[in-house]
Image (tube, rainbow, N blue to C red):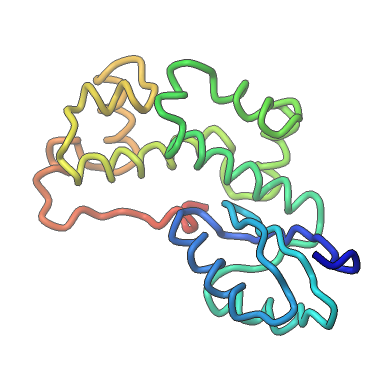
Length: 196
């Protein structure tokens, strides 16, 4: 390794899935003068080699794929909140029943939940609590479409206190009952980066 190499973390907006990580990884592999250290939800850690890194061209390519670079701290924290919610719901392995959402986010982002909630509301058209619900419902839709788990199992995994509570919230958000949704041939879902 060359001592003149410089490590940087590129904060990237709209990274919401493993597929996004793969897209960014593939894009970074085409960029000259960098070494990829790690790509994860919301960011990529790279090493700048000697030579010039064309940020403008890189950002243009990111935008073509539906992503963007983040430059300011508030936007970076807003994106970190979204990524943390996705990690909690999609990769948390029943975390919702073990620890409260607010405690998880506060611990993960080292900020009081009230601060995170206000910052989120200031940067989105909905509250943080509503966003968490929308992400959970999208995950429930996904699990329902696989038809591998019972509604009780889904309810438990997603941290609902009862099947009835999940069913009521599902109907309120989607305008379908769970049983109606399961009968649909094409089950409508919303891409996670389009929830807000």
